[in-house]
Length: 392
Image (cartoon, rainbow, N blue to C red):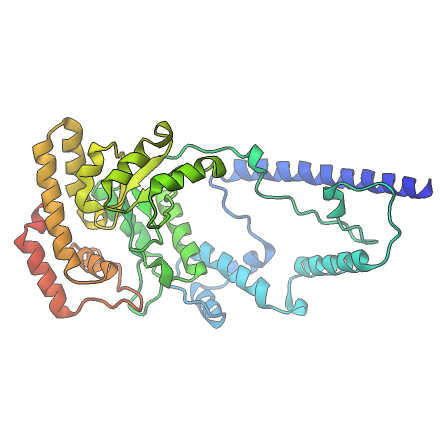
């Protein structure tokens, strides 16, 4: 009977703390939503301490921790402060950590010691949630509230990216550092050409040459500047129709694909899959008109960075039923892509073309190399010969 009472009290205590944590989590979520509609991360004490540092001091601290930050100023200082705080919390010793971090570590140590000590078994089995709650003496239990609800409770948000989506190049400084300061100017440049969606950190963005921290910084800055969410890419050589067949029941949150294969047969099958449930963004710029005839409503491509006006004219002509004009613009696109492909690495060539248009987003990152002076001159001549600077 005594053990039954102990188990009953333990369950009641657990329910109390779980209920309190749940209410607290709801209150925090509501307060966060009201204060910041974009759900910016809440500042910690250590971030407040780093806010007083100068931009140059933050840069030096990050470099000492193995990071390679780009230029830092008031517009992106908060992003680098959060990165520095995360790095510091991972590397400093316990004695050097802030008071609240030390308290968490002591609480975790006490919880582990309590769980490791022998205890008489309870006759009543505990719920899985109760088993995970540490109850060390004189230590307030800390509950980890899951940030992602169960699949059954998830709400699938509607997503659709219509028109052109630029597969953006990642801006770098001459020394190879990510240049976040260029992204706002980059966004303005795209908007002037009618390109209102972006796809960041992909192949054109040299994503595989970026560290995880750098990819996060680039994505955060684009979201901050453009207030958008780039779609996702799933590369592969299998038929995407077969992928959708397998995924429709297993991935309820799947909203679509970036389709970069030139096989229009498979593309057309994907567009009508499940009654048009998925948005299939087309990724072969040089044959966009073919995808439009099969029901394409949106496209992702690197040449939209510097030829957005051309492709928007193509889209407008197609929507009006003016196929002759649409075909003319597509032929111009194909001539441009042929000249583009002549000079090797897509990021190196694309960045060179953007510089010729007046926006310098820096060199590519190794192992890619910038075009030689001779190749830049040759590329410019090839583009002038087809009239690129008149109609792009």
